[in-house]
Image (cartoon, rainbow, N blue to C red; front, side):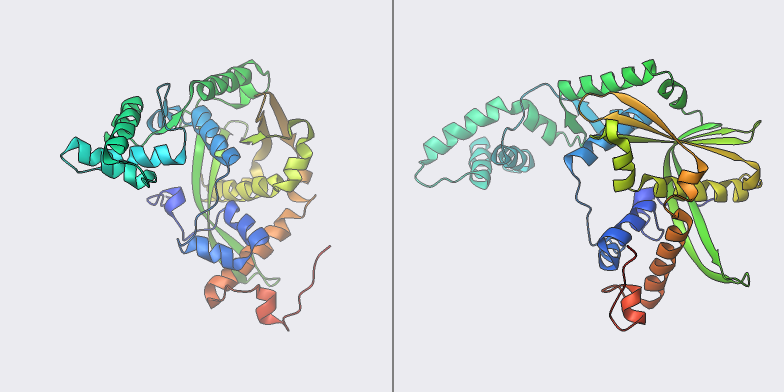
Length: 336
């Protein structure tokens, strides 16, 4: 049985598709920083929204734990947020002292009398009372607006009306249909003489997988939000989505062989992406074939080379430069 005792995002001992992307695009030093727990990926507004949509569609119970629709007053500036947080965190027993301290933590008090400061602080505290109470309660849910909630409902409705997407996005039953399917697996590369060249500990978190045990078919579906819905091929190339689908296929091959105890070669794969327009919430479904997954961008060789290099860096503890730099003269070549 797979050991899934460490949550996916907390396990820094295994290599994910995102790790490979960082390695290929940002270099070994950046990957090492992330795997050492010393770095944090920059989260764009698009990425944050995409995460919210994923959870709403694939993990509705988790969504309820992580988000709350907030239609009351909330801070309109960084300073107001600092004021609210300071007041929520205050351990002052005297209310006026707490207000003064919170105001001074967020705003300049130059030229203002204590009476003026207290008046402004009281006004802000009154206007933002519900927000401050929420912060004081220790509730860590992310606040979303009514508009964002309506957008989520529109996306879900559009999927249910789409003749292909509605069939692909099935409720998880943990028997045949799995959402956020976590696989810890091993990649083994062999030499020409069939000796093991290297082994890499890997991990994958698949949006949705459906197993048809009677027909021996597996359907891999991924959700993507995009601003290129009607030029999605550009997004596929820019973000290397076929590499991701190939990496997930390797994970599923391992799972079928080691967890289901069956021959992956007996199973037929189907690959889909449900693309969601970032602005209009329009839905399109794209199917990929084996040639696109395996051959068009030479994904098997690219994955093997990347994992081999990552393992080399791990074993040698050298991360500042590329493997080619360390093993050569310092002059490197490009594959154009």
